[in-house]
Amino acid sequence: QVQLQESGPGLVKSDQTLSLTCTVSGDSITTGNNYWSWIREAPGKGIEWIGYINFRGTTAYSSRLEDRASISRDATKNAFTLQLRAVTPEDSAMYYCVRDPKGGYNFEYEWGRIEYNAWGRGTQVTVSS
Image 1 (tube, rainbow, N blue to C red):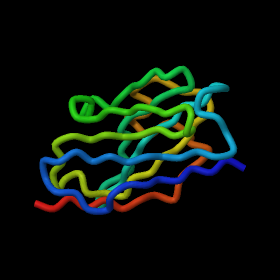
Image 2: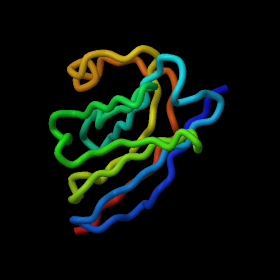
Image 3: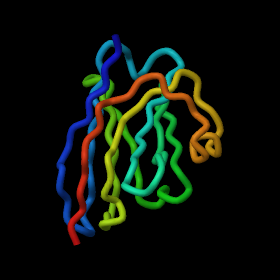
Image 4: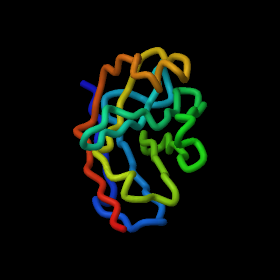
């Protein structure tokens, strides 16, 4: 009965830092073998993987966003957070937090070959110019 729920601002100004939090219930983000990712989807584009934090606290990021993205966690709250720096209107998208049970290579995430078995409902983020 795992549930993931995104929270954060729906509107962010250009050059600011976007901060989104995913709160997980029904599963622990620090046990098992799960990988916890942030992905996004914008009109006219497919799903883009941003990065993950796994059960050990190890992080990995898309090569396109690694200079601006950072993922951390708060085990006491069973939640993990995305920070995306220096946002532009190109970062406007629906953002989702998701889970996969075993991980994989970075290219598998970047190429959309990971099977996620739990999704949040998503949160719309608009970046104003």
